[in-house]
Amino acid sequence: MGEPVIAMRGVRADLGSRPVLRGIDLTVRHGEVVALLGANGSGKSTAIRTVIGQVPVSEGEIELFGTERKRFRDWSRVGYVPQRTTAAGGVPATVTEVVSSGRLSRTRFGVFRKADRDAVRQALELVGMADRAKDNVDALSGGQHQRVLIARALASEPELLIMDEPMAGVDLASQEVLARTLRDQVAAGATVLLVLHELGALEPLIDRAVVLRDGCVQHDGPPPRALGQHALPGHDHVHPHSEHEPIRTGLLS
Image 1: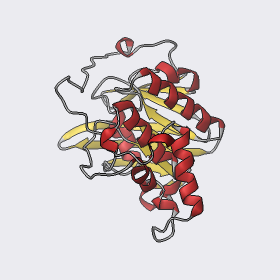
Image 2: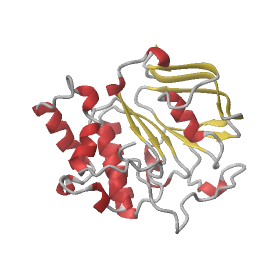
Image 3: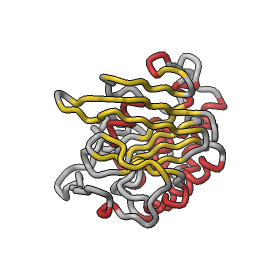
């Protein structure tokens, strides 16, 4: 077993006055690919947002690479891919500009050197978006938006990838590209924690599945084989993307 990259012990978190996490224990070790599964409202996204500090913890401890999260500063080691339906940035930007923002943690005083430009270019190549580098992100499809989000996370050459529903609302071609990209990162030694509604194309990569229900861990072990989202215990899924709802990319959030 590798060294712990993420360690959550007795983590509780509230959104407003509503308890969302009710004492989560979760360890993700170096080189593991761990999927968080569960119905809407089970606490999956909240769990990973506590890890990166977006949601405060009311009780418990979180460590990243053996360091208490409150004292952790080496964020270039962590790549985060938010849900594609988080708030849009609303700022005109090219694909390269968005992906470059993921490299800032590696630069000195925000000055890009050749190694930084090369890392951005390589990240775009990994997700098959090098030919769209100069395009405005507003001209992209939903699947292409998601590829750009992942390239932004890869630009810092992270050791840990945290991804919130990377396959949601993505066309089949982009799903295959994202699965291949993630497979390459895992082969290179990356550790991955990702939220999924179903394993889908990523199933062969998953080492462990952690199923949450009502903010508690219901299962932590081998991934259920060929398990669709509607077969999860207590599943009551309502898709968040109505046909009249605008897609919000989160590219600049």
